[in-house]
Image (cartoon, rainbow, N blue to C red; front, side, top):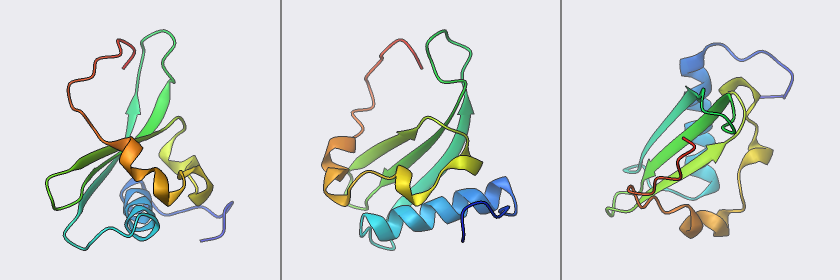
Length: 98
């Protein structure tokens, strides 16, 4: 999709980003990818962010946070594919901001 064109719905946007992530990180079809837009009222936290949780099918989980609304996320917001190991989700990290 060409940036600047209106995408259909929040669900459609999430599905599109899921597809980008699957292709970009060469994830298997068995990988589970959940994309959500979250709001935060904690001072210092971005007011709206997009979070992608990825389970690669081997038991490993990853978390990608993009500090902008889902409708504004583009392919350019994805880190290089080799960066995936740095996105490992420890699950118990509490930074106090979000």
